[in-house]
Image (cartoon, rainbow, N blue to C red; front, side, top):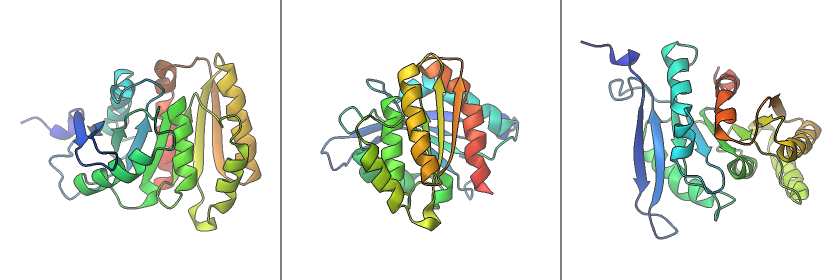
Amino acid sequence: MKDVCKQPGQVLDGEVEQTRRGYPYSFKIYLPPCYEDQLAVEYPVFYFIPGRGSAPSAWFSAGINEIADQLILDKALPPFIIVVTENTNKDSHGSDIYNDLLPYIENNYRVLDDRRYRTVAGGSLGGISSYRLGFQYPQTFSSVGMFGSGIISGEEEQVRAWLEAIPSNQKLRVFMDTGEADPLMLDRAKVMKSLLDKFLITNMLHIGKGGHDYNYWVSNLEMYFLWVAENWQ
């Protein structure tokens, strides 16, 4: 019999039927190897938000699950779950994610109920939504990931207010990754970093050889996942 723990994880379609907005919320979820066999195990969870106009499939089409499989099967990281949301074109502050999707995931999947093991990340507009969620709800998320993204122009005062209000026992960690060929977002990421440094928020800005696209962002996910997992100890 094959050792199922050596098999890749599963990528499944999901739907929240009852929502505050009045119609279903669609998502995709990655369940790690052995999820169906180790029923007593609970897992860290990553919420990934697609960019403008993208669907929940966007991150998976670029290979996010393959990166997760490699890290888990090589035992570089303990198993974790990935939830990819709908885009936030009409929900830029992620209210549907926070009010509908997150409770559904918590109630229907074996995720750890501890902010240390819950993070939100996104690409482009999804990265903006991720910092809005993380900065407003530090009691829920321990870290934020921003890919090809930075502070949106004109929101500096609001971000200062959010950061100033974060309790000392709920400090966030923020990871940013932007390509050299993405100058506008790189500039906005540097502005965000200056604010995070001012408020003593642990952060990392990685600048690589790439542009504003999923293939570049996914190429740096191993670095990102390992960085997040430093806080799981």
